[in-house]
Image (tube, rainbow, N blue to C red; front, side, top):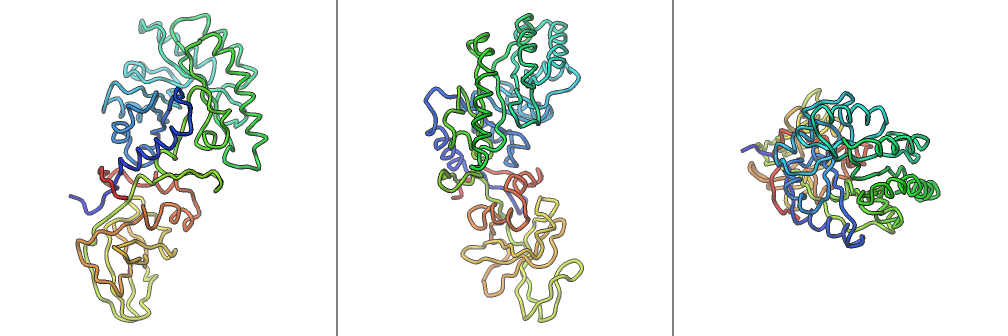
Amino acid sequence: MDNKALWISPAALRHNLDLIRGALAPDTRLWLNLKANAYGHDAPLMASLLRDRAAYLAVAQTSEGLQLKASDKRLPVVVYNPPVAPEPEFFSAGLQPVIYDIRQAQNYSQLMQGMGLTRYPVHIQLDTGMHRSGLMPGQNQDLLAFFRGQTALEPRSVFSHLAAADDPAEDDFTRAQIRLFDELSAPWKAAYPGLLRHLANTAGIFRFPESRFDMVRPGISIYGYHTLPADVAPGLHPVASLRARITQVREIRPGDTVGYNRTYRAPSARRIALVPTGYADGIRRLASERGLYVRCGTHRCPIVGRVSMDLITVDATGTSVKPGDTVEIFGRDPRVEDWARALQTIPYEILTDIHPRVPRILRDWD
């Protein structure tokens, strides 16, 4: 087996889902995001844990959707960015597209007719102010009229995206988005009574109850993280812990250097441990000499020298660590947030950087 793995805690995942569910009315559905390999956690693995809790699972692109369908063809998978040109393989797999443009809807409807399909499930995206994707307000009635005049496609949900629900300074804008979404989505609900309306992301769930509608779309909160103000921050548990086994320990003398370009020079005799993860695994080269550390037992061992492709070196001076001991690179201590602060980024990027070559294993670690 490899000397590294991303440990995935089913108990932490259940805790987070229960906490999210506890904020909702009993009949509110869950649309769960598994894009970017489930934020680095392994999408098929997460789908196997989440499928009984979700009305829909969502990914960003077709290849992600096909991967999930290959793992379980029964999964209800929505694709945010479906093919621009209609592709039969997409629909043969049962993937459900997001519709954001009337021309796109017309092209898809024509393909459905050619394939002999009717009432194929689709999801309507409205732009309520984020201006990143979705149907502009002035196009809403035209698209609705098109849908009511055909039977190849059937809307199953209508949604939009909150731009700044986690920022109290933007609360007026967020409330305006909620009102506009209610106004624009109401005719869809009237035309298709079984259709689900959804707007709330994690911040909407916990800060704006009026944004919850029929379904909510928690994102990174599923995996244990959020960007909420401290006064409403839920008690989420990180799901993933990146761990590796030390492969070597060596003693170096004062003045000896470690790693490429000799960026670390030992101020005294030091004990250096080798941890077999590097930038090919998603440990950024920028993590070199940034005050970051790994934890072995109760010891915090600073990263010293340059991060290389497959290895990092840590200062284990004063410890009894030995080859075979497991270190935590992030999880409980240090946390993903610590890495994000040191690298001037956000937890999303740290998690999605973890390369697929790192095995994902189910293990309750907290």
